Image (cartoon, rainbow over all chains, first blue to last red; front, side):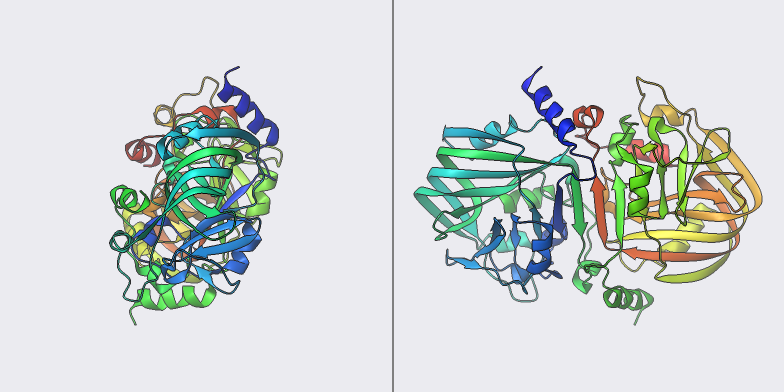
Length: 253
Length: 253
């Protein structure tokens, strides 16, 4: 058996598609966020009912969000990490209850493209979702955060032009996020979408680049996807027809 | 207020995106079905836990499925209607618990395009999902069913070339199905996907055309989408990259 075949056998044994399979819960769509729908109606309290792990942002696009072990954190453009109050809401987030189906030690990885190729080898099928958690020591981390917006909201591509970039060296911490299939285009972020938080919770953000010294990488195979659309005038009235792959690439990298 | 604005106010009041909003549950993706993934792992028993209303097919692509009031029916190429046993499984289906948010009387509609334009006027936003149920008397109904397949499974576009078409005149019955946003492309069927069943359960199938004498049309606004991917080798190994809008149009009309 090839490695992919062994992994697929594992998915079958675990029943990725069966009743008790893992669920990726997502608030709103990425295209709505790209169009400037920065206020959602899902609270972090509700988000916590759907997962203890994930990424996203906070209403008014108030920074980058990362959730680990049931704790929700927000990294603002001052580079600092804040706990997110339960009553706050999110315009876009993806969460799951994380439990690794397999883990692998990784080391001496020179950049984010190399990391993505290593992770590619741990994903048995391009057709399901994966939660990814990498705990370890990083020679280099490059992240960004986005500034809180005021109405009328500009599109995300415009906001990202004013993003703040952070560089960290020799830092312990966790990379968390998801890999989604190509077919989620328009709804979610195809392939990798990763955030970072330092072990001492002093820094973090949307991951732009990294060099891994040594880390443990866990992959959680996820066969179910549950999306809650905002019941807000902004969401209901936005023109979501058309194709935004180009705009998405601009804001993610 | 325009009619659309009044409907949107209704969605806001009902909380389409809120915790207790309606959920459209879908087994697998339409692109996997187009590629010939005709065996899924969701039983009709589980499907019934997610909805009492919907459409789809049965493993081995054994005809057209329609669910009304918790009863699941299968229309085979002999044109007859069979109850679906609970232990059977589906490769593709969409269900919800139907409760109309608004209803409208419709009459004297000359064809399916005209019907779709009338329904368009009942959908306040192009960004959420809708379940549609039309009960009434039809001057004309044109449906089709697809023949049960044997492995190795051909693509759906090839199967549809051998579809059986049925024409009914002066028939009472129900049209049931969904309208989905454009952004579900690759995952679900954008816009209308409707099946029909006769009131006396003597006939039905995937709706190709109709003339409405008089009927009551109910629309159920649905702000949540829950997709269960099959944990099967066929699904996990199929190449689901690429664009299939052309193939979808061929099989739906």
